[in-house]
Image (cartoon, rainbow over all chains, first blue to last red; front, side, top):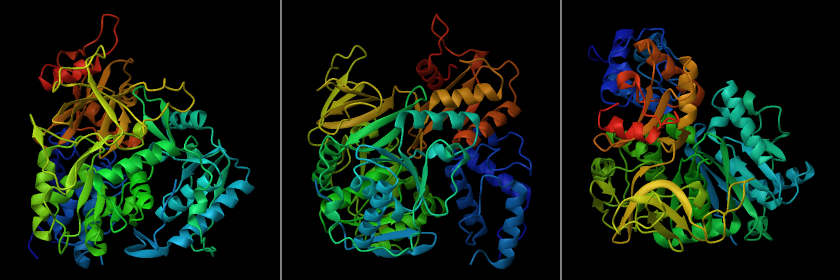
Length: 95
Length: 507
């Protein structure tokens, strides 16, 4: 397992993915450069269910492990996402 | 009027990702049971029944159960359960005052959102695993229903944000189903695979179309698709689906995230609509799945709305998609649909020029629930812009103040009101509109505000509030350049002008 797809999921890494998707115009433009913290949730960032699908998809592709269907909810924070990813990566993904 | 019940319905969801077959006679038996329940709870012919159901199996049975009881149904729009804010409550109250349902049907053990509770008597359906007698004559479920009887009500996002219930009669329903079956050569050998939500006209039709011609149905839970989009293509592959429907957003997503190990060679037609269709999205998807056996031009743009049951036009199977000035053809109008493209003063445009799309025909509704009926043979103004060329309809934009994202509609004034409340702005200090972006294959949703102290924090606040209340993601939120939005001399916001100026980078 390479360094990027391992258990080194940090808030910064998740924020980096958010900013990438915002640059690609799949997530709101204010996420390209605006302030984002670990406490921000999917909802407080203005991401809807479709945006959440894009986000889940990108994280899954980066991590290269299967994620559970309920991986992302509106009230999940960036810190929660990073924690869940580290747990899932340790387990080899959702089974 | 007749529906042909399949030997089996197949339901696919989180609890049964591989699919579960339920005999058609059992689903029909459940419909008969629901009809009896409705009658015993005082539902009379001509009544309306609201539905808050999530399981496809219950929804199909409940639809026919309502019809068997002589009632019309209304699958409640998605906003009904989105949030528990005062504004959401007002929108739901508006629906209740228009619909005036006798009952609200809900699934067994389903928790109702707070905004739905209290105003209407609730009837809980039996558990899905409860014993049900087979119904040997499913055709009897709709026996005696006349063409002028109300079949269902679909709520649309009116341009003011107020609830507008499009009334569909059995006559209009059958006229539209027959026209679509004819255009797309649907036969009993077809198999529909659909995840489209049943509160949406595309989802409802994805169930009723196959039933109208004896084709098979594989019905996926919408939530299952949302949580795992590849499941749609996997289901088509597994069940040898031949026809399906989807908004372009779904294609865009799956072109980027390629589903693996598929055989899509059985797939022969897809109605692509619900939002603006851009040629690049269809091409990217077809290129991505060509190796999986997807045949070129299976994806056909479709145009329609609840007010016309669902369809106004759709592509001809196998026909090469036509593109004019960057816009893609949505095919010829369906049989029986008259189309007219008009100027602002409602005079016909010079052929080939852009104008407002007006329609009339046997599947165009006669009026909104509780409002005055349209005059016989009058033209219905779709609120959309387009042009006709070589008998094909092209959609170029929208005049009505509705935003679309992933085939869901949102009233622009409601989005603006949320922004104004979030920032303590006066009414008319925000403008929401959609901006076509062929370069990224979607309509961008833009919200401009007039704020003296603009900051990143204000953009975040508005974005969060709009998502919380409506479940809508706004792509661009910013202050109007120069701090001013265009207004009439009387001070009324000129939303369309703001959109035009935005596209030129002038506001």
